[in-house]
Amino acid sequence: MLRNNTCRIQNSGVRSQNKKNRYSGFWILISVFLILAVFPAYSYAGHLEPFKSAPVPNQNPQTPEKIELGKKLFFDRRLSGDSTMSCATCHMPELAFTDGQDISLSYPTTKNWRNSPTLINVAFQKYLFHDGRATTLEDQALFPLMSAFEMNKNLDYVEEQIRVVPEYVEAFKKVFGGEVTRQRIAMAIAAFERTLISVNSPLDRYLKGDKNALSEDAKKGLRIFEDKGCLDCHHGVNLSDDKFYALNVPENPDLMDEPRVTATMRFVAKVYHYKDYRNLKEDPGRYLITKNKKDWKAFRTPTVREIAKTGPYMHNGIFATLDEVIDFLDEGGGKGNKALKPLGLTADEKKYLKTFMVEALTGEEIKIKYPELP
Ligand code: HEC
Ligand code: HEC
Image 1 (tube, rainbow, N blue to C red):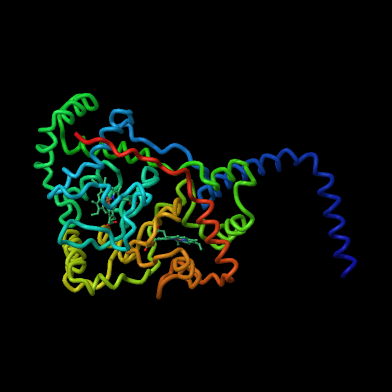
Image 2: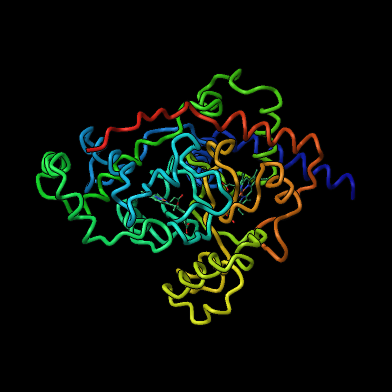
């Protein structure tokens, strides 16, 4: 029996030897096909890419004059109902275009209910807002303007207020060949936002071949980031897959303990036709937009570029530090979630992961000269 077996193996060995030449071309073709078929799939399924320039929509090309106009509007307090707030109030250049609060600032006497995300690299995002309710920066910009708890501005009124400023009238004519409209206000702001890109971080330099760009600890952290599944969701140039997951992050207690936050949550849910909005006790996340059960409490995977500067973390700012975020991920996320699994990281591994995120993902500082407003 044993001998027979050996025999058979030897025989088949001889057979393949004989056929080798005849079939080698065939196998080379198959291999090339496999490499071509598998490689692109691999590159979508979670790899890292160095920074590149952001996509620009054909309908709103970038020009230096448009970017400059958008920058002025971004910092202009005329855009809020009582002229106390600009976009920069909640997206401050000094705080990586966040406001550094757990729950964001808000229009005077009201309260916000979610964390203000960084605007760095928003140009790469397919979905905007934690629940993805806008898909272009041009659409997005009018939301905070109108929002009762953000800038609380009437759009007909803002158009008139900008139209009485000769410098603005002149600038809109030059940039758009026409008058001030809400859409053009949004287009100019979007053009400015598309310039806020994280460039030349140590990770970028490392990916481009500079093996000394990362410290040994950061390299160990990168390996953990790759091996422990972070890359499944945080990948590509913006370290985000543009998808939505329910990690079941703990609720921010303010949601129920601070009546004005509760009111804001109910108001948003009502606007999005959530029937039982008065009994809502948690943030429904993406569900508000899709009404699809699988999106209950799902939030968009955020970028982790510039993460050292963008805390507090998560859609509701519930974690003040990266250590808390890492502990949460290590435990496999919040109660009942199906997106994450416990990781069993050692104290050293947690330290390396943090070192990687802090050291490797911070790009060149985006220096903004505050514009002189007309
Ligand atoms: C009162 C604070 C506040 C002001 C003022 C404000 N924002 Fe925001 N911004 C937020 C908050 C909070 C969110 C997240 C809201 C959510 O997801 O529901 C956000 C989200 C965004 C996003 C989406 C980012 C992402 O990662 O999805 C963009 C872009 C943005 N704001 C731009 C602007 C612009 C432009 C202005 C001025 C026209 C502005 N914001 C004014 C607080 C503010
Ligand atoms: C299943 C997809 C998924 C995986 C896997 C995943 N994340 Fe995330 N991550 C998310 C989502 C979604 C959020 C936002 C959750 C929220 O806002 O409630 C997030 C938030 C974060 C934040 C906070 C970002 C911010 O600006 O608030 C950090 C940091 C982070 N993840 C790092 C990691 C690391 C490190 C790993 C690996 C140990 C990892 N993530 C694994 C989807 C994922």
